[in-house]
Length: 489
Image (cartoon, rainbow, N blue to C red):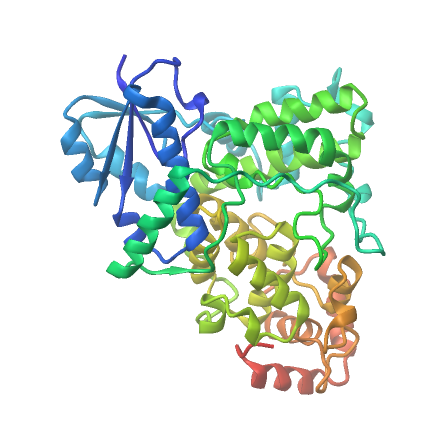
């Protein structure tokens, strides 16, 4: 049986055909020279790779070197590898005479099945349509020919603001216990930093699984104790609770530690056994079977240049305070908390990513390509395939709607409704002009004013554009936000 080369995001047992298959693992130092990674992201990747090597023992050749090319020259035997997760890596392995590239694993719908579905569509590809196709194709949450409960979506039940007392009655995910491998990783990263390799963010205890065993334990805990509350509060934000009812398993799926279909089936079983409500289960399935797979597939289906889309003409570079995760320089409470979460954990859940961080960047006109790199390197679950669609197509609307029907831009009223941030903030979400003007509220109207001729007209934007036309102080708001520029709010 050929030796299977596993990249550092292909570490679960489902990337092998047999339990005893010979394996190659490569730790490339050049990857960490090429990007400025969050310290905890670098730690998690190296810890997961080294833990996998320890699990496999003599079954694996584990090479630590400067580059993949140097490592492969030491092996000297034919290899096979599952389809890598970046275009750069795919081009590299396809150029190697001794390496056979196999179909992708770690996702539910195959690349071929997605392409067949997409080729048959007319007009823009929408996640909702793909999600229905995937539910039917894989027979997930289906009752006969139709969806369980008679509906494809329970999103209207999954938009609750956080509880007024600021507490969600679910146990927090258990944190993993670090071991000697983690200590070795931390010492190596300290040495690399002294040698000149740059990191950002704060070091800290490892909060996310580095082994399949740890990831499966966290998944079981989520399905048993947290799934019930997930859907209802999945869009809510709390300054006192960064985890809420989220699974905190995105990094585990993206490292390849968990098979996403196993997680989907586990959630479905919880519904069938009446251990979790359908709305909560459907919300989780939508994220896994729908959105995650959709982001993966559009990365490969759309042309390579899609990553560089910038149809709104956003030209500003990311400011240093943003790149350096300088949360202390920010007064706006929601943005300060989100940026501090990235600094301290390398993670915040999807609502702060989209409606605080992404929303603010969109309003300020920051370059989408720089944001892709920032989300890729600052988040423990960040990868080029994952962040291209989520940033270019979703949060920055840089492709003018190939993935979404409207920009995900919002003022302070949305953040006030869905979080506890505004009550303790120096800015007033109801004000768009003056010293107390919320930077999100003012930024919302300035963004619409600056892009009204670029954003395609559609029903979802009609009301906002009508309101824009009625603002008597619009010119003053636009001038105010121009003065504010990219300074920390």
